Image 1 (spheres, rainbow, N blue to C red):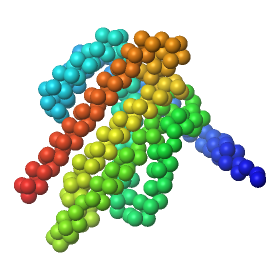
Image 2: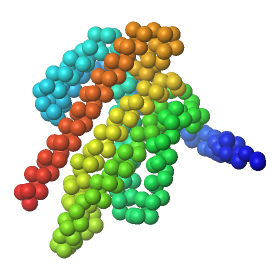
Image 3: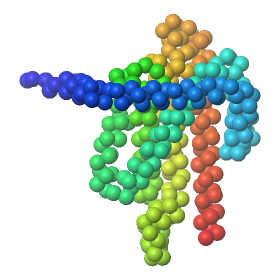
Image 4: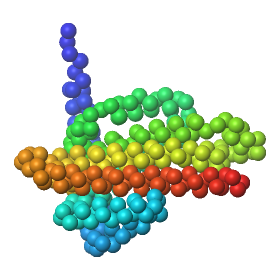
Length: 284
């Protein structure tokens, strides 16, 4: 039995895209890379203690003084371990990747919730995106964008986007039909139903998806060190290749600290927004 030439077909498709759109992709990659570098240079000019203070205030507003204190201690540990520069590189890539995943994912989730055909069509795509090994995403990113931070952002967005789409779709579909019918009875337009009834009620579920997107972004950014993304992942990769156990432990601790801080802050934002919406609904 002859083997189906899936690999050859994919290689041909990639070559066709490179021939026809290679120059456009290169121009976009160069401009995007300059933007990332500019953000990194700008953030590097900010005093380390001021960045810690900003994170502490955000943590306090989102989740109380305990998280704020833990944030100060955790970030100071990163600074004390001389990992501040790779920490900033990782932070910038996570912020950019998570923001793009959310900006693209939430509208797609709304479309999936509003259209059963679109929901059925995008569900298999999301299944593939979520079950595909994370390392596989590095291959097309490397082919199209080369080595650096741009392919890291590209692969991270693809890897981290599905939760934002799925949870937005799920949250809107779980809105009680009674609320929607009441809105329709009062003459609300589809846009008013979405933004004044469905989205506020679905917000806790959507925020859970955003939390997962942020966490997946961090994990993929660390893995993307294999294609030259830099940051804390580069230190982990170097420690593995040279069997430097202590070095690997230091970089691993830094990744864990960032993950805990981002996780608790995103959860706190979700609870805060949910509380505000509940108060507004009660007042109305």
